Length: 351
Image (tube, rainbow, N blue to C red; front, side):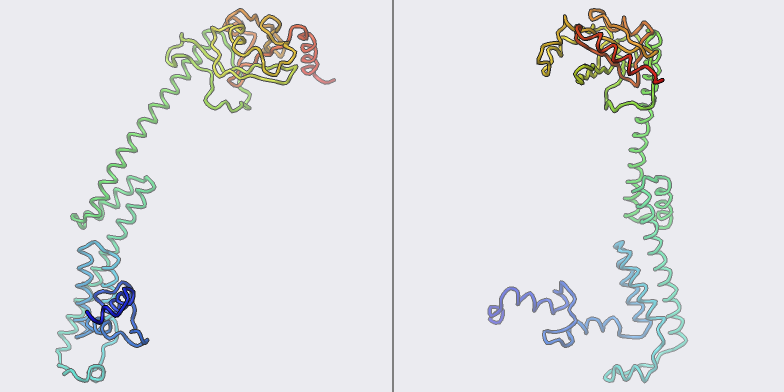
């Protein structure tokens, strides 16, 4: 204890790290750069005895790791056992030179050769099983990560057919089964959503056709996010239709967007929510002083009655919903004719 008190905590830890029992990192030298005698003694224990004894020592260590499912470490010890047996045998003189203080006992070379052969075969089998364990587990884990459930299950079951008590594969098999159930549930939910979506689309088309509301797609639909033509009750064709609508003020290059304009609402009611306009400094846009227009399917214009429900205009068959959106032009009545003339000029083909 007196010596210990003369050293700092770091010095004590450094001294303990020289002792194999307390090592946290491998240091094969002493403080002067020479061999760590204690460590070399431990290492030498693994290589004492005949080749068969050395190989058996490594194989037993491999078995210990295999029982703990440490397949990589087990494989390494089996490989060492094979390496010892594959190394050229040492002559009696070589062994005497290496260990001069130990009496070399003559052994039955034929019996020793058979023992070595049996150990080598056993080590190869053990190492092969480690490879299979690693292969099955890794293969099953990789397939599971990619949601390749049949392949993952097959790899896992192959391993369990050889080692039914393998806890790692048993746990993995449970995970595969749970994932399979989860994916099946997701698949069912997705199919139900898709079927419902198809049913809603069919019913919406039926509702539009029954009302004589025309639609057209140009292939250049704007991004409306979640806004779309829809029924109040998607599975009831008689329920109210709402339509994404853009109100344009062409003489001032301004717009307003209405996410869902009900077919039963009049333009006067809808405009009452947006008028007066914040940018209308001259107060040109009031409910009483504006006219409303829509384009016809043939490229002309139709004046929209502000007090009529939208369904009255939509069901005439003269207008259409293009790319899922309705366009309504609003102009001051005093300048409506000006805008109509400009509209016709822009629509008139060049010639």
